[in-house]
Length: 362
Ligand code: ASP
Image (cartoon, rainbow, N blue to C red; front, side, top):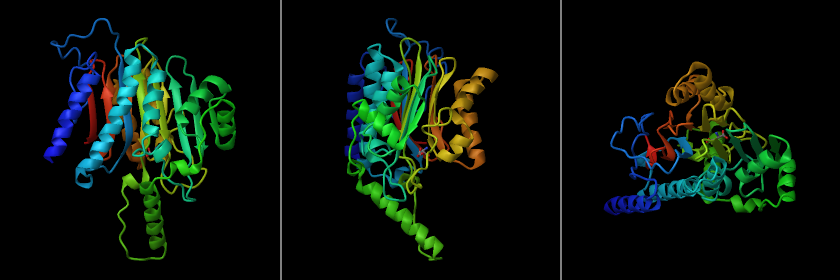
């Protein structure tokens, strides 16, 4: 425990160093800043040379409780989130686009086996890995989405390529992978996506299913950790442009060919400079039916709701349908909100005041 605390302190120190130009404090496990917090914080001296920027990331929502987590595992998750946040924030700080920042943050999480996207993708019922991803540019409302990919190492980068070079918005499976190959995107063998934890989760769910249909009395503890994940990022850049990016392996034991909310523009991913950028995670079927990303934006646009209220209203709609999960959203002023209706969500943010935080539990 002490060693863990020490790590967290060292970790914070490291973060402060990393973010020295823009960060005011490293504050793990703090709640997100109140919207308009710069006005409520008269002592804060914003860096006048830097226009407002902001970034939020998530690594999936679900039953994530301290009691089920070893200090070591928590450290690994925190380190992964911190790496992604750093990758995206460095890009924003040097004046590059929110598209570049969200893509970089998501790519970092795709390469990390702890998260259900890219390398750490969950398995389908057929024992394969099938990935979905999407990216959206809030300035132009251009969007790129890919689904049911089996060999693309970084699905988010293919989504960006679809947006910028294909003339289409959405592509799937072999056609999308042929397009990837033509454009020099890295393809890998399915073996690359094998992780023992995800494989074990599939076996556990299959055993529970079998037990259930045969009327067996054995108890299986299936947690969201076994089923879910998904990673995403939303950002505001120095030019006032918003972007959202989301990537996932979907849900464990999904049918081959099943596509979740992640690549559905207006459901799991949405960005519009007039309002906000949104990336969601959770029970994809419900997030599609509740058109979550677009709803957050529409509530702000047509009802004049704040980012926070709009995001909560959209998530409440998911819950009312019976779905669980969370979302991250940022508006054009750099306000950030990260609501979820599960016990935890892997998440992190750097707000418009340069405040940096990594959080996991409620
Ligand atoms: N939303 C993702 C999907 O349904 C899964 C998740 O976020 O855990 O594909």
